[in-house]
Amino acid sequence: MAKIHLLDNETINKIAAGEVIESPKSIVKELVENSIDAGADEITVEIKNGGKSLIRITDNGKGIEKDEVEDAFKRHCTSKISTSDDLNSLYTLGFRGEALASIASVSHVELITRTAEDSYGTKITLTGGEIVSKEDIGCPVGTIMTVTDLFFNVPARKKFLKSDASESGNINEIVVSLALSKENISFKYINNGNVIFRTPKSNNFLNTISSLYEKDMYNSLLKVNYENNGIIVTGYTTNLNYYRGNRKQQIIFVNSRLIKHKRINYFIEAAYNTLLPKNKYPACFLKIEIDPSLVDVNVHPAKTEVRFQNEDNILNEVKRSVYSALNSNNIMKEITKETIIHDYTDNKVKNNFFEIFEKSDSKPDIKKDTFDYNNEDYTNIKITEVNINNEKINIFDEAIDKIKDSYTLIRSDDEIKSEAKADVKEEPIQENFIEITKDSDNKLPELSVAGILMDTYIICENIEKTEMYMIDQHAAHERINYEKFLNQYNNKEILLQEMIVPEVINLSYDDYHTAMNNAEIFNDLGFFIENFGINAILINSVPSIFKNSNIKDIFYTILDSLKNTSNINLELDKIIKNACVKSVKAGDKLHLLEVKALLNDLGRTENPYTCPHGRPVIIKMTKYEVEKMFERIQN
Image 1 (cartoon, rainbow, N blue to C red):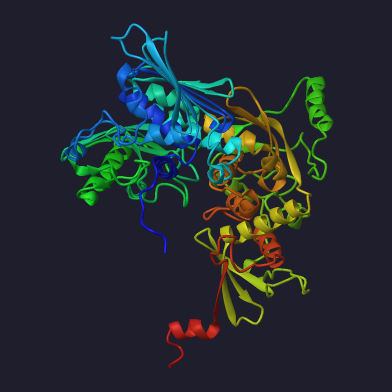
Image 2 (cartoon, rainbow, N blue to C red):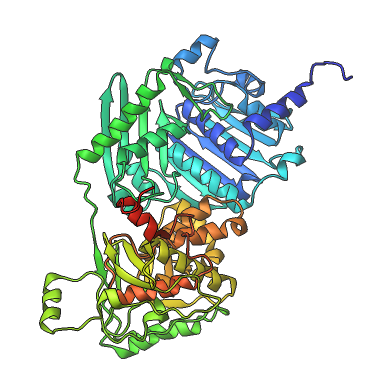
């Protein structure tokens, strides 16, 4: 058996690096936190190749004393604490004294630093944790830490690094979070020589948020200002007009320390209760101030996990703070209808505009869905209202194209009265059987529609009148759209709807970075996106099945799905499922002819019984079961 022995310092440092320094993001976090602890009010973060080849942190903090520079790279050397009792009154972000030793042990490091008391600075270089040189140098007060060739001596860890784009995205996420933690510090972030953002040095938290996020987010913010039982919660949360498909924009600080705490997220979302759609999450930026003795930050080397004393009490106060912000404002969801005017007077301009689309032939296997631009009332509606023109109904595609009558999903009282005056004759619902060809592709029996319950559930019975069926119209349409979209994608024959006026979406850098790095995925899905300036994209065309939907909402749904996966191929099915939730909603009013088209399309799907997310589409009850409930049949 192997004997127990003491490891050498090199091995110890590399083990520590495995715990603390797991990626370029970890290094950026540790070094920026050191700059914050040093009292800097200007911090520059520069990276190249996702931080693999270069990470440089420059600050104007107090610097490191000349005779302490070497000690800074020794394990467990720190100026933050002296004894374990100091952990009960900890206000600094760092305290273990492991980060610099761990970073130096797996990279090439150069440190230049000077204090205000020294007339010149010190430059020290290390390779693999060993000091290579140390010399005096002229430099401003502060510290410049340069890390290059990360994991050059730990190939096992280096091979697990993600792509440059992924590592850059992770670093961006942490730099944004650290910038939000200290609005009185100006942060400058440079990626591959390009200045990505610069935050103002301000005492106004809102100014920092506005410099990092898009206008839609900024306009939806509600102020949080709450204090109770020694707990102070400040910051901002979003109203009902802004939500995302994941929790990445829920950023929480405890005593200025960025933390990850799932229960806090759940309590924040509980404050919204049923105000937001299912699987949609608010964004928030909350700063919690609490007695340090009630928080244990010494849980994990990354220092983002914390434990609270009386945790439920603290989390309930956070929930109340968000609830108070929501209830002190008018949070009614705003419905905005943007009608695109396309009655061009200059035909030459109009023709030139469409020529642009015709010349852009970079969409080989994707078919164009043609329609009459002159007669189409092309309307982008931001909630659930759907408009249908006088020539055809677009919701269920070709199944209803032959219907000559025009119907509107949501009709006004005046329209209903005018229909009555016109004495429009309609088929009685009770006598109308859904015409379904009995072939191997069809999975539904022949049904008659008895009515629609709560503008959501289609009530049917079979031709023998021995079975009753309840069909969820939203789940049914979701299944239809999902299979149609998936089949088009797999066959590389997505039907496109080119937009008369392309959709311009302003994004935060993080969203823009994700969108442009996944532009090929968006294009493959039929959403053709282009760069449109600083942190903005242009959508030229969309899949035809989504042409009456809120394009921006679908774009964000796909974007958030891409953020949540590391393997696009494995998660593509999930991405398509999430996109297809933009179908007919519960509460949308459907005419009988639309119901017929819906059921015809549903019967020809591979699985008409559940929606893409596994919820039931159809519930069947036999006559026996109904009569038994009414006690017409005795046990």
